[in-house]
Amino acid sequence: MSAPAVQFDHVSFRYGATPVLEDVSFTVERGLSTCVIGPNGGGKTTLLRLALGLLEPKQGKISIFGEAPDEGCRRIGYVPQAMRFDPLFPVNARDIVLMGRLDRIRFGFYSKECKEAARAALAEVGLEREETTPFSNLSGGQKQRVLIARALATGAELLLLDEPTANVDLTVEAQFLDSLDHLRERATIILVTHDIDLISRLGDSVLCVNHRVHRHAVGDLHGELLREIFSGEHRLEHDRKTRHQHGDHSACKHD
Amino acid sequence: MTEFLQGLGEFFDAVASPTTALVRYALIAGLIASVTFGIVGGFVVTRRISYIAAAISHSILGGIGASIFLSRSLDWPWCTPLLGSIVAALVSALVIGWVSLQSKEREDTIIGAIWATGMAAGVLFIYFAPGPAVNPESFIFGNILLTSKSDLVITALLGAIVVAVTALNYHKLVAVCFDEEFVRLRGVAASAYYLMLLCLIALSVVLLVRLTGIILAIALIVLPAATASRFSRRLWVIMAIASVLCMLFTTGGLAFSYPTQTPTGPVVVIFSAAVYGLALLFRVGRGRRGKT
Image (tube, rainbow over all chains, first blue to last red):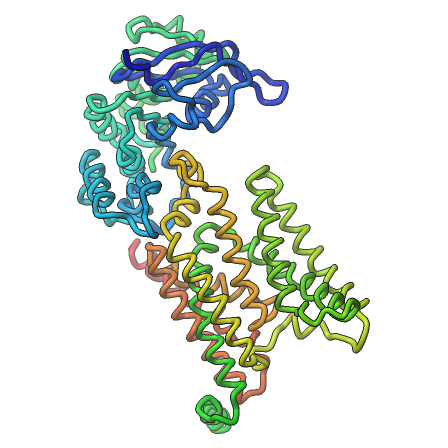
């Protein structure tokens, strides 16, 4: 039987004396989409960084496709938030996607195969026409899709997305979700989000992270449980969308 | 005006004349080094680390001072100011890089510390060096017209190292500048590449200090690349434009300063700054027209 995509086994982590995750155990099976939700400071980012091998657990064991995170991370396509990057950095979409093949550069050059893989990855997220568009000229949603294409170009079996729809407007979010729907057939997806609508559309299950981790089926999520998890944070996202649907766009963020 | 044009003619005569090698050496050194400055400047501007380059350039006075002190005190003729510059620049680059990688929040502190300590140590070493007094001003402001044949060889050698290392590692250096964390996740030694980039900057700054001096060195790395970045959104294009601009600035600076007998380094920097200012205005103007 093949190893699960991600396995946390009694993992604990603390920054100095401050505990962030305590005795966390869960499994993400291959081919499933899992959403990670929880309040700010609850440990979502730490969970991601542990899975990526960027942090080491103080206790417990993590495996990615049966390997230690520093080995298994090569099979992960990490997609950070696009807004994290310098918007004026002088690269185009193809340059960024090619970074997914960085470990395959020989004598300073990308091979023909690398370039084809980058082109295919851009096509997969619907951006084949934006290949030579500068990063600074792409919309927020396009930037996010370029970062997904970069993850796909690595040949990743697991996509790990960190709040991909944060700070994008609702139109862009809809385009982004269409791309993601398509990717579910190709890879295991773990998606950190505050967006309840995104969870109901994409998640096979939900990991609720607030220092400890509890798994729920998407259908089990209800108002009382969400209030417990988020202490009201999810309502901000819900209210934003409700106002938008009713014609009040003042709360919407545009990029 | 006539006098100036006449002087300009004398400059070009001097470049062509076999008897006035210094002017020719200065021009060739400036042209060769311009390629280095354009390439490294592209990284410095896009990665936004011009303060690191400035700290490295100021730390070089410490290396120069130490080399003068040691060569005279211990009779080490091989311990030249150039060697001192290279060692000080590389050590500063590695220390700043190490601190930046280990604890990012203290990077600005270490930059400030290296900046000031390098200058202070240099002045003290020069003060205590036995033998005839050394005027640190020549290192602080530089003089491209004092370029010798051996300087030319060293400039070409250091330039070739910077160009070759950058060409072989271009994509990885760009990726490290854009997203260091992702590079690490691909199993590529991101920290090593960041330190490599800082060492390339250090070697370029050593070249610059010989041409324009410590104080003005940063200008020739930053200004041509910053000007070029107003006109292109591809890093390699920015580097190419910056190299050409740098060649024009150094040639223009030499051509202007020779007949007017003004210090070359400051003239080159003023030219660079003026063109950068024009580039800013040009883009602002274009932006306003675009909005209307």
